[in-house]
Each structure stands twice: as structure tokens, then as C-alpha cells.
Length: 126
Image (cartoon, rainbow, N blue to C red; front, side, top):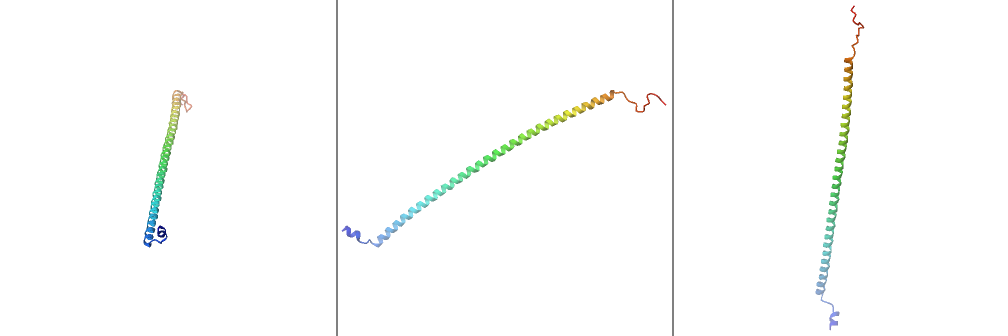
């Protein structure tokens, strides 16, 4: 009797419901897979955002380092220029002092030197 029931075609309504159930299960599986893919894609996007932010921060660190190095180089240059200017000013001042000393010595020597009579008249009145 069971063999007879197994060979008999099933009711079309039962077949229809079974097909709908299979389709519903497949649809649910596909939706779950799609949701899983969306979640994975979103996770990848978030990971990429994090990587981008990390790179941006690395760039900021490099910019700060470059700025610090530039400032240090500028300070070093200013220091060297200041030292060079100070050295030049000292040399200039020393040179002026030496020139003033020579001028003073010359003036003293001229004051102590006998006066030459430009007329050639040495006490003789005409």
C-alpha cells in the first residue's frame, strides 16, 4: 500500500507549497549570504578608512618632523649668522680702534713736531 502511495502523483497544491517552501528557503539563504557579503564589504571599508587615517597621521608626523628640522636648521643658520656678524663687528671695532690709535699717535706726533715755517723766513724781517 505504501508503494502505491509513493507512486501516485502528489496533490498539485502540496507540490506548490513544497516548491514555495524551497524557494523561500533559498531566498532566505541568499539574503543571509547577501547580508554577510554586505557586512564583510562594510568591514573592509572600515578597515580601509582606518588604514587611510593611519597614513594621514603618518604624514602629519612627517610634516611635524620636517617643520621641526626646518626650524632647527633656521635656528642654526641664525646662530651662525649672528656669530659671524658679531665676529665681523668685533673685527670692525678693533680695526676702528686701531685706526683711531694710529690717528691719535699721528696727531700727538704732529703736535710734538717742530713747526716748519712755510715762508722760508726764519726770523728775518724784511
